[in-house]
Length: 116
Length: 115
Picture 1 (cartoon, one colour):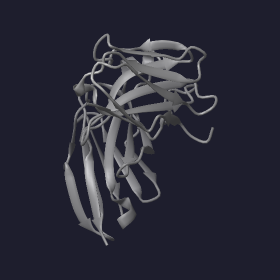
Picture 2: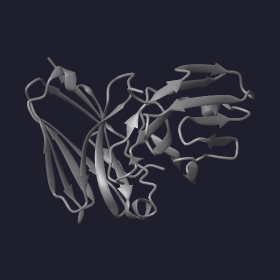
Picture 3: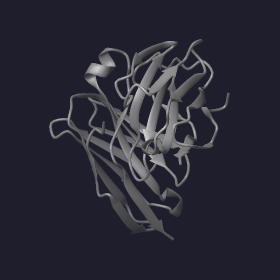
């Protein structure tokens, strides 16, 4: 099953511009994570934000979480051609966290193209 | 090992054959997950192990799919009597599991094609 939706589905920007991707989910979550997937490669963890956090930074990444709206956003500042990839949000439900499975439920992803 | 290792990387099989996909998690990782990913989609949860115990198999599509992790390390996902609709990328992930808010490390996946 998929958790929710990400938007936009595809985004094309110039190098140096900022990229913002949004993720909506449906359930009560313990945490939300963002992953990147380069073409033909595996998924790489970018950042994790807990349900009691509102904003988190990691290098050029900024993630926000609004649990009242059940949504999150990922901002990549000063984008580079190497940021071209698909970006997925993934959530861990409270019920799964409580039962110690911690399974990640992924969204459909946003495909980002950064043009040099 | 250095990362999560999956084998084979590519598998082409005829419809009706059984296949076994292997996952070798990061050494010491307690939690192991199997996902399936169709082209252009996000990964879809299949099953989860905590050590050798299969604690969640709610994502397995039907009884042709099974998974095991007998010694709490290497895991095998088996698909019996494969069908064309089983064609997908199968991904394995592992995590430390001692804290439940931890990142998952994914393998490169096994691309399964059923012809």
